[in-house]
Image (cartoon, rainbow, N blue to C red; front, side, top):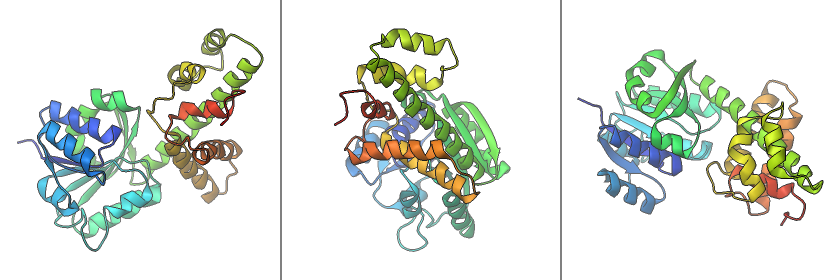
Length: 294
């Protein structure tokens, strides 16, 4: 019998992961989100229960995916007192997919272990279409036996599943992935912005970038959007700022000076300060193209 699955956090990624597992035949039994209308809508769509108590999520499922926004939100769903996913959690598995600090993953694992529950980091690369199609790049951290237990489920969500190591290590790797991605995004915006200011044809410039050392995955996903000012959100500037901060903080903790990480963090923070935090990260071009700055 397939294990019952629940989701806490059904934004763009969580909702599409839930849809994907439902399509694959898994019983998705419960949906929770602080945005109750979104949770209710998804629950109705996939035939799950919309629950408004965290303890009810745990009671309804064997495997609980959490896909929340940041460290504070992650800690808030695993409190040691009051309504909590930890209530009645003995034997349950929590797969925590948010991009949060490694230390928070370690703390959540400690709290879960204290009540007889298991945790696994399921750090995601890729974006919304991949979540829906089951082609995420998933980096996992935690006990290897827990990873093997839930591997069949994760394989429905991922076309590239990788076990990284102990709890916290997958989050470290995800932080480095986003560190490099965000630096590339900010750098591409500056290159295209300067090209535009020089009067160069940007379609030509992007083609040259693609054939030279300036090529990157970010060029493929964001280059045309930067040129056309299409910043439909797949990965928000606010999330880019948060993730850049996580990586920059890790550097500071080990005594490394990361000037590019710091500058990139500041660029995305400028977007937030100017009311652009909900734009896709490609919107950083709005800070670098002449005549666009609000």
